[in-house]
Amino acid sequence: MTPLHPTLAAVTDRIVERSAEGRAEYVRRIDAAGQVGPARGRLACANLAHGFAASEPTEKQALRGRTKPNIAIVSSYNDMLSAHQPYRDYPEALKKAVIRGGGIAQFAGGVPAMCDGITQGRDGMQLSLYSRDVIAMSAAIALSHDMFDGALMLGVCDKITPGLLIGALSFGHLPTVFVPAGPMTSGLPNSEKARVRQLYAEGKVGRDELLEAEAASYHSAGTCTFYGTANSNQLLMEVLGLHLPGSSFVNPGTPLREALTRAAGLRVTALTPQGGEPTPIGKIVDEKAIVNACVALLASGGSTNHTMHLVAIARAAGIALTWDDLSDLSAVVPLLSRMYPNGEADVNHFHAAGGIAFMVRTLLAAGLLHDDVETVAGHGLWRYTQEPVLRGDSLTWEEGPTQSLDHAVLRPADAPFSPDGGLRMLDGPLGRAVIKTSAVKPEHRLVTAAAVVFDDQHDFLEAFGHGQLDGRDFVAVIRYQGPAANGMPELHKLTPALGVLQDRGQKVAIVTDGRMSGASGKVPAAIHVTPEAALGGPLSRIQDGDVITVDADGGLLGLHVDHETFARRPITGRAPQGSGAIAGTGRELFAAFRATVGSADTGASVFPAVTAPGQEVRHAQTV
Image (cartoon, rainbow, N blue to C red; front, side, top):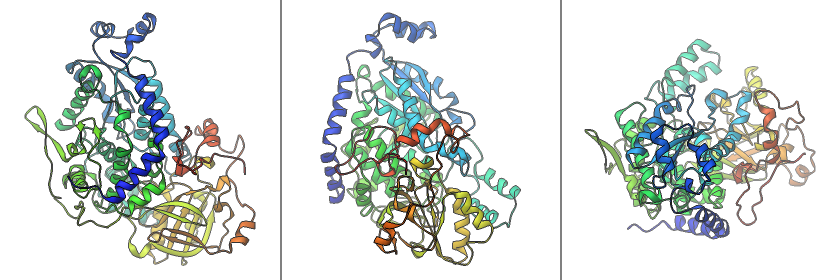
């Protein structure tokens, strides 16, 4: 057995130590919730009758009995979003599989699913991050009836999968299997899509040409093929041991995809106490599993959104994960993949090159993953070096690739694209921030230039359109975009404009308390700045012309202004306030979230936090 890398061991040990009290309390809670026999057995007759009133006669008979486990199906299905449209037919297939496995299943509830791609640059984007916690609460409501002995969670994109997992962890005594839907097949290359977007930003092509390129890229059912938050979710669920091995990136509508869906129903039934392999999700998602997820995120160059989501997921299991942990891991975890926007390939190319199975194999061999973990496939992460294969009508798991099949897309740990991970933490007088370096060329990773300050992304785009940013180096400060200000919308719509200026030879960077997501591109972006401007953070005192340094390699978010002079400055600008300031598109309904949400480094959540010693959760206040 390969010894653990010393940094991996040290980070894990300190997470275990700082989480001892919270994790122990969480485990006590889920242990107390467990019981002998089906959960519905403790319901009074009237309660139980309500629970099966609409069922078919054979289902009623099974639910009246006290032997078969009942599995909840919770889904994010809707037929507008390509990633979730395949889920339409999953419940019936899963029910049949559970019955074959000796159980019974009921569709317990749906959760909302919104698309950041549709709401990008729109007011609806201000609901996106909050939707994660709404989804968690919706999942909890679906599971709240005490009718269930296990759960199947159907979700893919952005905030949906983290929300489902947080909700599932609040019922941590239940065995739970996450069921992916897979990516759409490859369409227009992502690099070509980005090229047309940039031409449109320059006014060199029109809307018709742009729409044609977008439609050729996003062309069918399935997840978008670039390596953003959605596909980062899928990779992380597999490395957490919550997907069946090799199931994340199998395309929708294929025989293998359908066989894997059926297998998920069979497997969750086996994981119930009645099925003989009791494996509650709260015992799978422990400190080692969380560290494994962090390593996988860094090694794959995954979404910056997970610097918040993983913190929130961890604390839902009683674990205190910090940005320092991610930063220390990033220093030793090599970058092993190049998927757009970090390279030319998409997730289908990654999967074909060896995918998660090879990535897990090479990281285990390097001592950079914990093998000693529980998974839905059984004990040991080594199981995820296998890949599913259909032999006739039989689904089997066979040894996966022992080497990468395309070194331009996926590399072994001893010959990586970079010796360290694709995400880094920045610190300095402006606070703490996250930067994704895997898509940024080395020559662009250090920018020192005068600040150009905007309180709204649309003001930046207007200035760009009028040529006001041409011909000079600058750091664009987009502030009042944090969780407490307006829900921390993604600002990915700024990427094409900034890319145009960078390509013209200007030194440009962005500093913001908002998000840029897994689609963060070639321009250095210091995002998630904490404390945020709306809570009186240093960004609220920045003025046009202040010289700022964004140093991705050095980990610095610097400000070249006398400290005492800066501290005496009054706050300028402000987040929208008042009952009518943030209204329309449902935003007024989330005032309570804006008033109570925690900071980005503590997960940007409205739920109570498990924090590290000395780490406070900063909530919104009037400034």
